Length: 231
Ligand SMILES: [Zn+2]
Ligand SMILES: [Zn+2]
Image 1: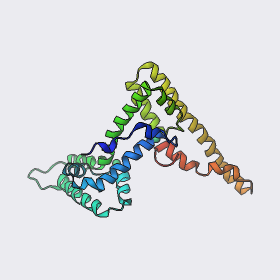
Image 2: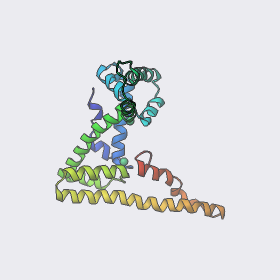
Image 3: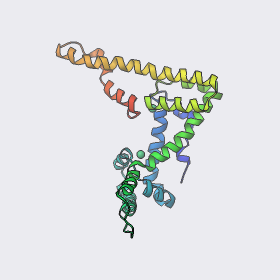
Image 4: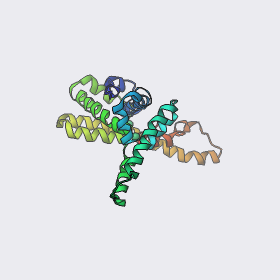
């Protein structure tokens, strides 16, 4: 299995300063991984064994369905479905209990090869990010200058930092994280509030120009809360 897919230079992730940097990190690994599975990984038996066993979640199946490589997807699904059939419905002398079969079915539902690899890659990249923050003043500035953090990645950073950073750095780091998430949340709240008012003003035939920023505030709230979409 190729590990370099999950290797991205941290500065490349943080330099654009557009939206949540950790979303960018995840999106990069994710799209590379989906492309890899439908391409080069087709020829790698160890990857196929894993995709057969773990399968895919809804999000990642959808991403693969949007890709152009339908034949690759069909071949991957063919052997995965075979393995599901084998796992759940294999004829055996002793019949497994309903509870045991339900447990096996739940495992198939809950696991995803892409999620698994993203988590593997993110753990390493987040650890590097925290190390860079602790050791490099230039990177601390770059981190501080980010546009925002979405809620799931704010949580992830705070969680990981509290497990690994020394006290003094942790206090600076959490202050920076608070700042990035709170600033965005405050602006978002104002925009969502404007959005709710937009209807009144429209009904009253009022000016809508000042509500330009509010137009996509529901989509941005979705992205802030879920880490999916444009913030
Ligand atoms: Zn994010
Ligand atoms: Zn997944």
